[in-house]
Length: 356
Image (tube, rainbow, N blue to C red; front, top):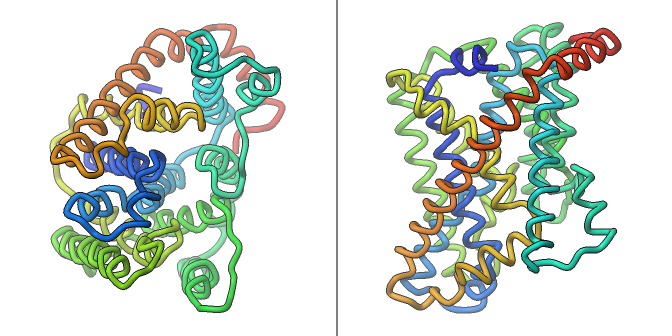
């Protein structure tokens, strides 16, 4: 595991950290009751800030999966990697549920405990469940992309984007998608970038394009709100929305070739990004306890300290969750996955299933 981390570039690991901060900021706004208050009232200085602060969640999801595809298309998907992912998801679901029961945040029920034991829930728009199922497709996608040429790869991406992004925007037509299928589309895109590098644009060009799309996305939210749209996130509301996708792609291309020094600190912090998500977005009970009962975000909507509360809350949550996950990795994950018992099981599973 440590060897695999050292092969990753700190530029994309820094990008991973920034992306997860944006996702936490998104949850600050949409999971706290703030968005409902903002949608039912006129624009204020605080609501403009919060719209811009919390609009990047779906874009962040695209970024996160693009990073995954970029690395995994050149890597082997083994049973060990999948079980490590599954172990992390189950660990936080079970431990946080038991902590909430012990502290009286939720009441113990057999149904609630059963749900904590099952790492999957909503396949449609649940990120964690979608990512788990998507991960199972990676070996098959890698076989596919290794057996098609550049032209066929391009055509496959264009077909997917036509269906899930272009046709999705046509009024009067409904395109049903879920995270599993969309993550596969993103994987096709980032694997194409890895296999057939772009040479026309350099890092500076991608940076300018990314900045332009960030500005266009931000303006679109404020303009749509000013025009009376109930959901001003229209062009970034889903991961397959046109501005969410384009902003994610151009920012990914910028960070991919950004030249920074290798940093063990950045790589270590980035290794806990998924843990940050699994902790702070663990369940509806966590969302209620964190954003509504503890931080009381809605109370700061009309406060002069609104921006300070939002920024501080996101940073503190990120730091605390990162530290928690570092402790889990150090004292639980590494000892277990380095144990002779686990290696024995892993070898038997790989012999049974085959390493793809």
